[in-house]
Image (cartoon, rainbow, N blue to C red; front, side, top):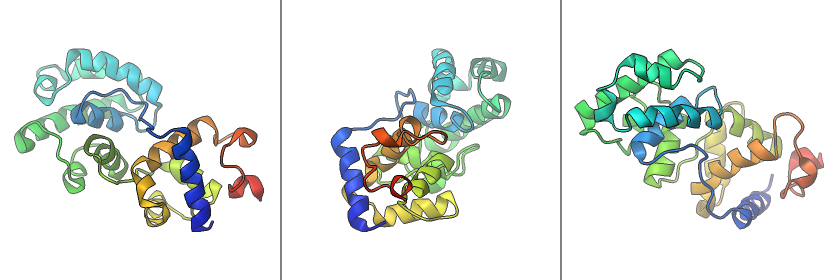
Length: 208
């Protein structure tokens, strides 16, 4: 895909939704970090149900360590791998208190040392909580970007690098939100709704 076509796609996304937001519920960097970490292998809807219960019990590192692991597990039991995720929530909270004065660090290297936090989670937190120009790529964005022809890559990391290199800088900050929402509601894994797609004129999947 040409750079002109890529610019056109993100210009259309911007016109249709100039301020895209994550669909995860959060109040601050800590609750965002926990919500994104919990979102692995599940839907945002299920995460929001879980965090609604959990954050009523505790929504800071200091309060999280005062409740039991059983309380955390019970709150997020609707999620895949909830036992491991509960352990990670408690471990993250203790580390943030011990090493970062209870604050979420605004640095990738520090975030990726936290239990259950990988590159995608770190990128979301850096982007949403700290307004950094990162681009979070998971398997879904990897699928959508390659299907549309924005890149031709083998791995999510390759996709991230390719998109960062070619998406116009003014659109980088919102790019992963637009791609997530596009993949969730239009460019679905099964039965993509190409006829109603706002960028189908330049999409390689639709035109090939």
